Length: 446
Image (cartoon, one colour):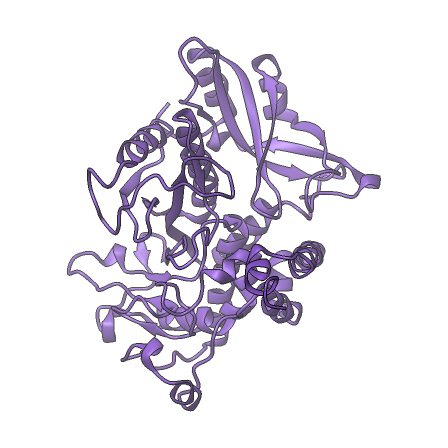
């Protein structure tokens, strides 16, 4: 089915019309990993009305062993048929779930609820939050650490270098079958690197869509005996994979970021919002760039932002303001360029929104636009200009996050502590591991 269903009755009819036999109940853990368990179509009506119990004690952040029972409550607006099953197989549907505690309260570890809560705060101020991410990723021959490239192409390359164009085409066709519109796709800068740009929508729909898109990309590659990865920086000396996120706030049908009478057509709300992203970016980096490997990508020289600056044209800055086109007021937006496509989109979108809302409420002043290439400035010049930078490692991101009231408010105290605990463990594992680099660099000379 190509359109979003709206009610429980719509879901039941769609399942019957499409001869669905199984339904996968989807949800996402704290790290952005998609989780699922399946029910038969005979259980669908009960699940839609009452939810389905499951053991949450083994899911990252969901529950402790002594309080493991959780309820998955399907969101009927998210029901879709999975189109990659062959005709010989029975039809399978999927539906995203909100996770609920036995007492009926939202689960403190449900990252979808974190975004719902942030969106409610925006709604209380009259705003709807729209986002449009650009998903970058790599195709490799397999998941072996001995990486075999699929192509040697570069930015926007076409055949014969872009051997993966059929993979992208098949991915887009499947996404469109699921009612997910795609704006564009192309080969990216690094060999075997590709990009799919999703058409903007409200943030909750887009977070669900991002999770779906990542799975579809992997499924299409797997069907061809290949492997797709969203690892931020798999290739040494090459660009990593980002998730540049275009975003805007609307009041009803009016784009709250657009003002025809202001410089660059940026409204006062938009200017405050950008200032909020610049100020709070270090705190929310643990959401937008949560892996040890993420910090191998956000370094100077590889088209990823490091410094807390904004500009209209330059892609070296953290925030970019795309040029306004006459008559396209609805398209006025800003682009945050630091996130990577391996983040948890529910948490990342929530962090961006809360940073912007806080700035709008407190009326943060927007610093001047960066009018030169910040990478070409000397350290002394950047210091004199007061230009700060993102955390340079997961450890730095943890240390900044630990002090962040904004992050605690965004996540809630329970998930805030769980995320920091998980990331500290990841950093400890990383720092105690002897790498291939160290063996090559030191073993024969020390």
